[in-house]
Length: 222
Image 1 (cartoon, rainbow, N blue to C red):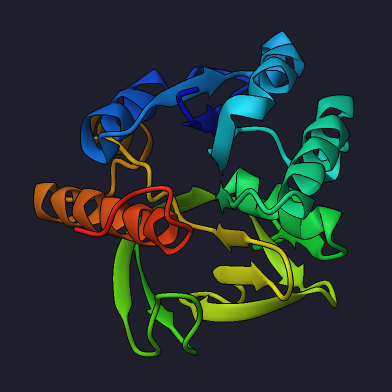
Image 2: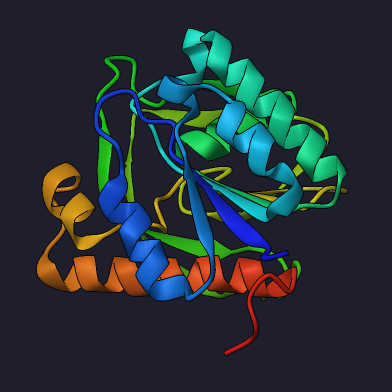
């Protein structure tokens, strides 16, 4: 049985196919692709027994909309976390799971303006195989943030508050950033990035994802 990493794309406007392809090319591991926002939960349920980790991508949807598929996806991932399968939430995925664990999500600006560009995220305490003081320059594009943190979670990195969060007992890591970005995503969605910043965001993003997966032995160490 070949074990695989499930990439969950909760898009509502445009599928993040370029980001998926970027992960295929850089992780060198079997991946599957799932679209619960438009195709439902069946593909995730059908492949769960062969899945060893999950990466949840960003979305133009907002957690505060409280759409039915939000709850279905969050509850499925909580069950998988309880089965000791690691979950990495990126941007919307971060907010979705933080909300499921009791956090408050809200718009950063009263006028709902978007935050977009590159953000320096600093690890604030040792956790897993990450060390205090490590820096990741990651791409960001979002309107909402984790405003207050649920009691089961702890902040382990900042650019903005709660930019990097883990669960105290389950293998969940969330980041408000987009470590999965492709060059196309940066060009089309984060136009503020220079070519040098785009390259750095992609490099640091994959380094971040690989470190997460390596901690749980989903990928071998470099």
